Length: 415
Ligand code: GLU
Image (cartoon, rainbow, N blue to C red; front, side, top):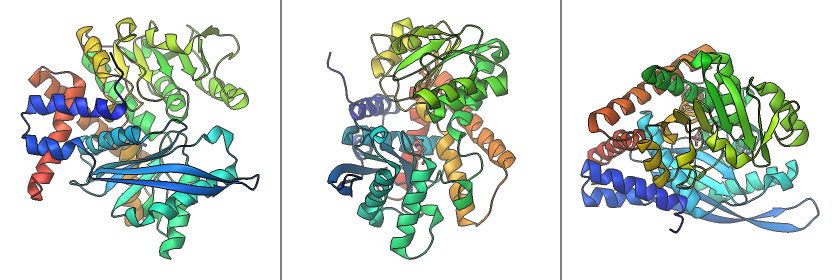
């Protein structure tokens, strides 16, 4: 069977839920496609004096519930369809967490590993120069995502501020604390996921202090998940991998040691005193909790049957294909779906917006406790819907989120 692209997957997920919810066809029609797409070509002066043109996108999927929100990815394989899918998932994510925000996503086709800091800065500023009329604190608020960092957010905020003639912290989130960032934003995605794992473990009767964990991907989210699962619950991280390879240690890896090794060698592979493993094999690890923490499409019809974990906590966006979803559900594996599990990032981004608008600064403790309440409420709403309707957790998350977006569209007279 032909592979679906991420946007076809997002549309397929929505179609399945539209049927369960008996959504009116006209409402489904509005939700099926983004309301606005921006495509730009960005000429950037490279260090060798030549000019290179980069392709960029910003997709504003739906703003019925508020200004659109979502990260920007810098990825060599970025496509408009990936960005559309991610923008759709942002819409459901913000609604599920009951944030007064719609969903958007941005992307630039580029390989950050082959670019200097200067080139990245010029690219980031060029992107803002090209789309500035369409973003803003009350319109659309970008944030970090795959291969974009707080540093990149500051360049974007600074460029936007120069164009509009005043400092506008609120135009992007995920900034460093010294320029309008929120305490706790750095590891918010992973930390938010931990609260959902805690709730899932409680539901399934799993003792997290004795649980084993495997993590696919060791960037910001993967590393922080490894660190926090150990720190907060005392669980053992026995396997991790990145694009270049993986390592396994049944006695438990040291998350910070692995991160140091990755900084020095650019991969987790060959971390001393561990058993090497093939990155693809991590999906089939004998563990209690499997955490995909990288990119989309890694749990597929081919390998879903091999998953042995009791919980799959999707810290990545879109890691599981619809066919794989069915297989996991039939096997009785508890999936914490992506736009629930990884919603901690955007939730703390929203806290950052609130702090920027009110010129205030919350403490880390305040952020953690508000994040915990939001994530726990969303998890419980999804679990309850899943039980009540006899549907899997992903479909239940869709039902809750889509209902809220539709309610807003109806209130505004759009449908
Ligand atoms: N990129 C993150 C996500 O996929 C965060 C988005 C945001 O903070 O706006 O949820």
